[in-house]
Amino acid sequence: MKTLKSCLLFSIALVTSIGVAAANDRSDATLKEIEITKQTDVRFPGTMRVIGVKEGHVSLVAAIGSEGELLDTLILESTRKAFTKSALKSLQEWEFSPASYDGTPLASSIQIDLSFQVDRKLAWQTFQAPGPADITRSGTEERPVTTAQFGELDAIPFPLEIVEPDISVDGTATIQFYIDELGHVRCPRIASATSLDFGETMLAAVTEWKFEPPIASGVRTNTMLRQTFSYADGELTAAEAN
Image 1 (cartoon, rainbow, N blue to C red):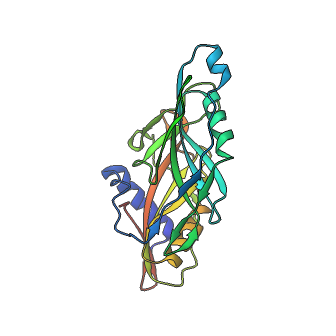
Image 2 (image 1 turned 60 degrees about the horizontal axis):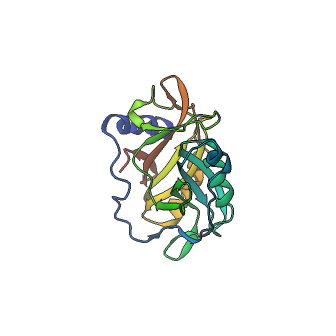
């Protein structure tokens, strides 16, 4: 039997060569997505107003726990750090209804896009499944955080640590997750699953994985993958993203 690491390398290679299908193209209707139940105002940064910047944009992914708690945030795109700080500060005050599977709450993630315009009310929208295989650059410097396509990565991120899941039932699940610029898995979610048990088993395993840092144009970056796993007849396989 092939190891999960070898299956994963092969399937990621397929994703690189053929691309990823649309994120909302899934047939599993038993998953209820995250809902925002309270959204407080996000302030336009005063420092931006002073220097004459009149608009900005922040796109982020928020990981929400099974009790609706904010677990993690990953910036996908931001025009300036001041807008990032304003968005993250306000997000701490937002309230969420967790995702669920047949009524059972579970951890998941949601993309939130925020558009800032001076002297106007903040515009925002959500995407339950972020777009296919986008990558984002670091926000540690005072420069825009930008996105690029997965195919622009210099190489496929090599898996360094793969946790083999302890599987008790057959099934299929698609897990969507980000690899950050340190190679850690961030903001994973179950995109589809034949059962909650199998979906959560794979989600827990993928959360512990670690990869080589993704690189684009010689610079560390983040990348998003959607990986489909199947377990049958005692064998776990990783196929191309769906």
